[in-house]
Amino acid sequence: MSTMVLMINLTSSSVAFAAPTTFNVVDLGAKGDGRTDSTRAFLRAWESACASPSSTTIYVPQGRYLLNEVLFTGECKGRVTFKIDGTLVAPSDYHILGTSGKWITFNKVQGVSISGGILDGQGAGLWACKVQERTVLLEPGIGSLGKAANEQGVQNVTVKTATFSGSQNGVRIKTWARPKYLDMLKVNIRGSSGSQVAMKFDCSPKTPCSGIVLDNVDLTYGSKSASTSCINADGSAFGLVHPSSCLAA
Image (cartoon, rainbow, N blue to C red; front, side, top):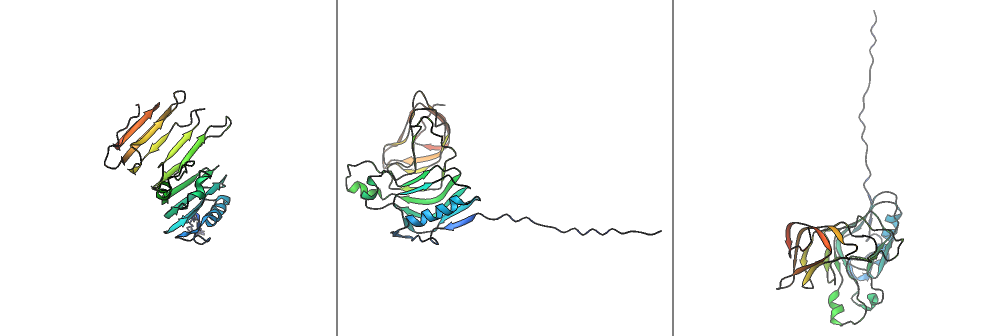
């Protein structure tokens, strides 16, 4: 009687997942000296990242990067993350931005994340000149949504661990009163307000705002008491919320 021995060699294999491609703005010509215009370098990083079908990261190292008016336009093929360890600086000459009304704009983008960083709008120079021109936007904002009847909505916008310096409004979302555009907003912010009304939710009676969540908010107004204003807005509050929430439950 013969015996047959079957030998099976089992080998282990591993699957390596590629890390997101990183575009360092310094490698593309940006200077972190606060004086050299780095706009073109940021746009080169954006164009490369936006054209990539895989996830990408645009990295901004420590330093101060001067940006003139800049438009980051989609639609992008993959997810793009801005990882900012430095400071983005607006021009100190308000005339550069005074006629456009914009500084940093994202248009037709989806799946874009911004992590960290400081935005320095250099607002002190603007107010010192007592400008009587059109207001210059030096803050993250979503403006004039719903002006056109066939306009697509905006969703999944995230701003995390960012610092706003010298801005007129910390964060602003502005819409036309057409369809119900604001049905979910989570606010987690702390700092000092430039006005006595630190949080203002002003919504239309025909299209009220709902689903607003205030989660650990701490805003002050110098040595005076800050307040909130809610018109046709409802939501909930969790943790420390100062000034007190005025949202309808």
